[in-house]
Image (cartoon, rainbow, N blue to C red; front, top):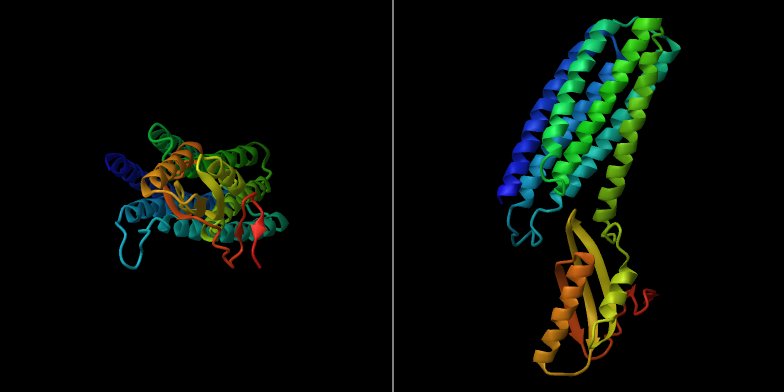
Length: 301
């Protein structure tokens, strides 16, 4: 509980600082007429939004299950990620359109103030990244926040490069060119977030895990004759659930409990699956629903 509290505080502080950087970049972008600075401000704004969502999701995930939400509110984190990813993609498209217009019709830019604002943003982002990185490296929310801030820092570096080029050469097209690169960075991140969130929402097998490997490991437990109707899914990042039908010999309940204990140990040790629903049977139930069969193949209609 204390670890979660520390994570929440760091996320809240990071969101507040990132929001201040966003305001500074918006003001600086409007004054200097730098699209690169405004593009980076959009990126920073969405990252502040993502940090705030991560904070809210972490608090929601701690709420206990209810009659209406028996898994609790863990998936709030996934919904937050989906909203964040979709918003990122929309902003990236907007930056692309504006950058192409600027390349066709360049406008004068105040490179000096542009460099100053971007420099301040870079220093702040490095500081926030350091604070997030030195704690809870395995905490998904904190690690995600760290990656967002690193993205902000890279955006600031791009703006600094554009400002330096304009200051030295007067080539103002460097500003929209850097804006395009920032848009690509935003879009790549958006696609990854949406793809991961979508995979979880459609009950996909956890990333890096194969259902056939889980089935093989369960089938190898002494006393297990067959495993079918196997389903493995992610409730939320780090929370994996499993359900399966396991055929065993007709035997005393005490012996069956030993088989159950072995199954749970294998699932926890080899795959990190702690939430399991296993139904014992003395014969295949011959269900009509398509499911993963004994050798990892689809069975059913």
